[in-house]
Image 1 (tube, rainbow, N blue to C red):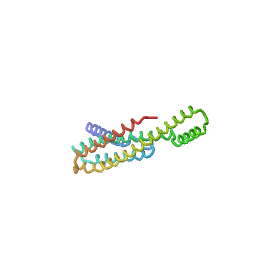
Image 2 (image 1 turned 60 degrees about the horizontal axis):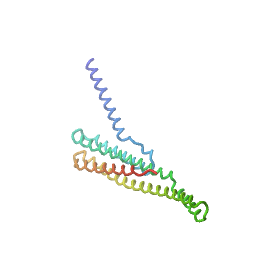
Image 3 (image 1 turned 60 degrees about the vertical axis):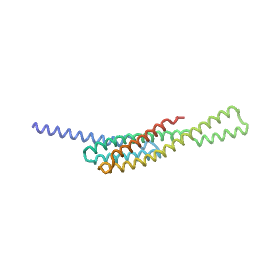
Image 4 (image 1 turned 180 degrees about the vertical axis):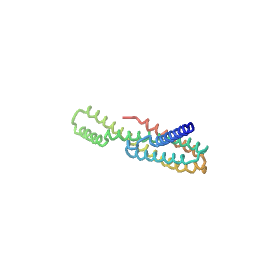
Length: 207
């Protein structure tokens, strides 16, 4: 009976470990919800999720050993880049939401109306000048945010292309047919670029 208890204890332990590992694997690729942001940010987030799934599937399929450990370490670093991608996507969505709330079309229409009142000499000149200046300032804010959003989307698109290339190379490197050190260096370069992009977009002044 003692051996049976030991066997059952071991089986329970292994089962618990499998459950934990599976939960951990799910958490690595489901840490964000792309449907909480609009386009084009949703597309970027979904693409990052797919890349994460492919990367971890590649590592899981790699035979145990030093190479797998090394690749797991590299992919862990790349996971940080995927997290940066999500942070950038959320910030880009916030910029776009702010622009929509400010309503640039409505602001330009309001500016046209105010300027027509100046030409018709209707209303206080000082009040009209102040109102025009305020509306112009808001329009400039929307234009700046729109430009920042577009620049961020363009740069994120480029980094996604590089990420796809790294995902493809992971299979080659994981079987020892690629340069692991060169791969790790390229991963670091991409993550650093994503970190810089995230910092830049977060520093964009809120109106």
